[in-house]
Length: 187
Image (cartoon, rainbow, N blue to C red; front, side, top):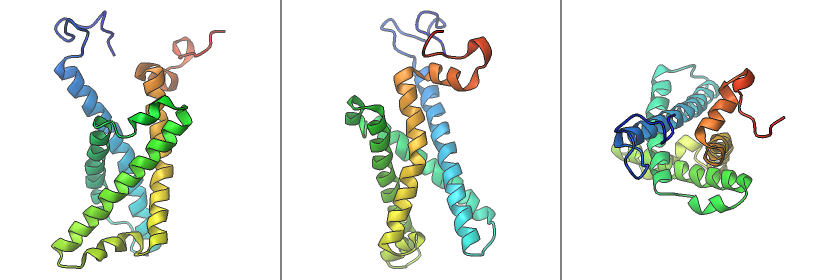
């Protein structure tokens, strides 16, 4: 990432703001990271469900996991743009991470229920058929919500750490070795 001081001419305006291209690329990068994370989560959910039901691995269901990740990635990005959970950011980082994980787990679950209900409606089934994806009961719905919540904790932990430390610092912490490695405390 370039700093404002050494950015290429024309990429940062006089006020130090990023250009439209830089902002668009930054948003696209965030969307890609969110989507890949969610795709892994949904693909594993789907694989588990297929194997438990004894159906084997279905390429169709794995492809659907990608579509869901693209949709829900956008839901998370829009939620973040609308600053959902922003009020938590003045608290200790652990509460920010847990709070945002809970809020976005509920949001994802609500969108998933709506998606399943719409699918049932298009198939001419009752809207309650949308709950069969969750086992058709409140305990299984709560279990899905808990799994979403726990799965989002590492995602928001990394995201919030990047917000506090700076994205480049967190990246350096994980991918650089030797003398280039990021240090919080000097020796």
